[in-house]
Length: 85
Image 1 (cartoon, helix red, strand yellow):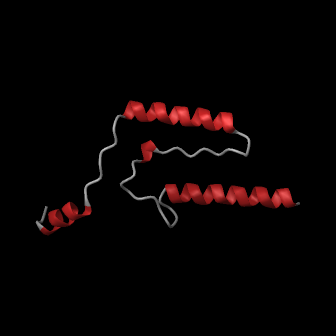
Image 2 (image 1 turned 90 degrees about the vertical axis):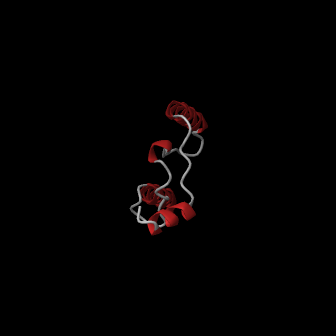
Image 3 (image 1 turned 180 degrees about the vertical axis):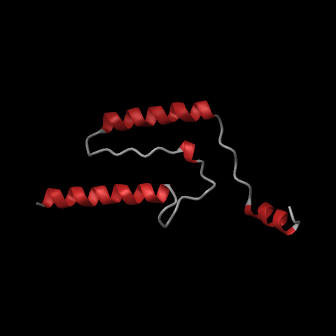
C-alpha cells in the first residue's frame, strides 16, 4: 500500500512540474527561458544510465541550437515602453 501511495505522489509531482514548465501552473517558468532548451525526463531511482543519455542528448541539442540569446534587461524594456515603441 505504501508503494502505491508513493507512486501516486511521484506521478502528481511529475504532472505539477510539467504544468509549471508549460506555464499552466504557478510558479511558472519565466517566458524568457527558451522552451526548446528544456527537457523533462521521468526517471526512477537507479536510472543513472538513462539520465546520462538524456543529458548527452540535451547537450547535443543545445550545441545544434547555438548560444542562447541574452534576455533584454528590464530597464531597456521599460524605456522602450515609455518611448512608445
